[in-house]
Image 1 (tube, rainbow, N blue to C red):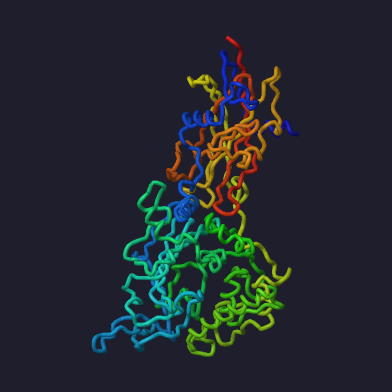
Image 2: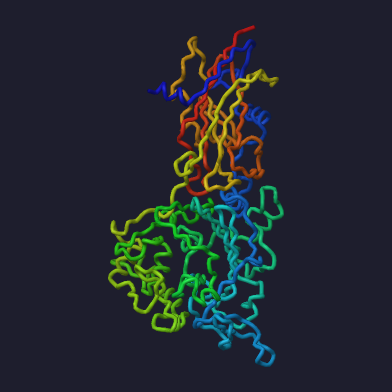
Length: 608
């Protein structure tokens, strides 16, 4: 059985050569090459294609950007001044509000103009204390207006850039800052998301910077390439190096954006949906398309610095199944903010934990206070008892049917669900990890396969050691997520030599370097990408042919070509294992393929 397995997996080359040769010798004999010698020869023969992606710079922002680019491809500039950017609407008593000069008053002072869906001016006010859909963030202006959102879609990848106006008081006033035409804003946020893989990344502007200006675009973290020195330096001074904001806590529903009333989605608060006159006039419409992703969908945060800081949160986060059957059939709720805050606000009830622990009591109290502050900024018109009847904004079963006759969630059902959402329930909550593992290359989730692997012996080279040369070739398409510029895959190649016997019988799987020997471990932590570990020569982080260090990958939707020239020795069998590996850019670091890609070549020499 084992012999037949190897026969399907290996390709053998046998060559008889006259004249002496010396090369890598796992026994460490006098003619063996040192690790440094191997590295020098390999670089001379192959070029500098042995490098881990996103490792050119350890500055936090630059490395973060390089990691994101390796997964999502090119990152667009954050351009909230773009013509396609949208203004987040602000509604008060069912009318749209903006800050403009009041022509009816001497000196045309800035005041808040209230218009109905037909554009008619309803009234003017000097301040805004409440709005129909206050922000649920709790740390930004509750009724802020004229923030901008820019969405860029490239294949499966979409980028969201939010330029949010806010201030320290969290209240709006008739200050020019709040005008639509004023490019100043307080908070810069970026989200990248792959709708196929569920990979997500978060960038934030610096928190020690009082203002930003969207008059010109902002360069992405890491610039536009490894060699974009000016933009890399500019970005390093622009973005938060500490990852202070826990973006994942709110954007945790396996989607890049959270559907809530403040974002002005037409599905929230309009009985006639997108055909409602107010939806057509005020909302973002389908600018942020509705795309529910359920509990089993893949979802993973990219960014080694970010995930290192929040590793505890990430490990503890769970999806929840509503034990009452009311609320999780259509979308995902979690033990993070979609459960603790959005769900509570959506049903208009306070968070609840049955038999809370002492630490939970304090956090629960703070969350109730935050929700009460938010609610104090909600208009009476928006309440179910008012003219709008849009809050609570989620109803069991019918979901968006906010008519007065639709029943709200019952107290008993809410207490059971809320206990689950705070991670305090049991098996009835159906807890599952929110974040899914980094997929190994060639796994079912990844879907890519190495193909066409061959080995051949080339004529003698004129190197100082007089050795022979093996040429390895194979193809591989890194198509996980459908990103043509994706660059998170490299290859490790391990080579073991065995003295040839008179009868060159096929090798068994156990004769080859093992999967463990082909991986990066403390035992293989040599300084160069090519070295000797015990009886194995290990080549690490080989990229495709021509992809030299610190260059961007050429877009490709077909398998890339890989080629390696390796030193070889006379009267030896060279047993080779090739292993693709994914740089995960999270706490798991690297995921290795478990497939067997085994080759061997025999070189017989006789003295001339």
